[in-house]
Amino acid sequence: MRYFYWQQQHITGIPVDDDQFEQYCFISHDFSPYCAHKWAKQCASPIYDSLINRLYLERLQQLAIDHCNKEYRREANKHSKCVDQVKRDVPYRNICVRQLQANLEWIHQQTKQNDNLTYWYRNQCCTFNQYVDCLGQHINAECGFKASQLVNDLLVSVNAFCPQEAFNSSDKLLQCQPDMYVAPKDFEPKGFASKAFLSRLYSQLAPETGF
Image (tube, rainbow, N blue to C red):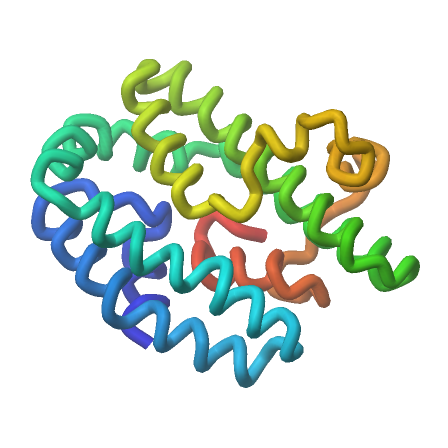
């Protein structure tokens, strides 16, 4: 599983030089879709497998094409070391990652009780967008607006199926409702030991920053 090996060798997922960027782009386009799809087939339910393939893996391959050109690489490499350091810092893990994984696990528990796929989808998207905002604030504070913008563009491309404007709309069914997706303050994420597939996946992809 070269993709998972690369992620574990580069714990923040941020390539910091041309050689790492080349490896990242090659693996993202050619290896990770196959490996992640095979993993999901073995470890996830059919509906998760379908969602991962349609909403994530196809986007990941297109992302590699869009963001692995020389111009984007050159600009990203100016800021990558600073962004990499932010994602290694304790505040990022204890604030952004903790909240992300706690929310994912809380949503899993609530959806299991209520059995409502629409709420599950909305709440997953709302918590991911909350994470993107949190990460952006940390990067902006330490690395500047341009670095924050580059990372945000990257995440928005991956997250095309959860556009922020849709979840801030007047549609009450899609509106983010914090009481529906934000975990209680005393709720501790289990990460690897969690029954929530997405939280567990995060910990596997980023074992040094995940819980």
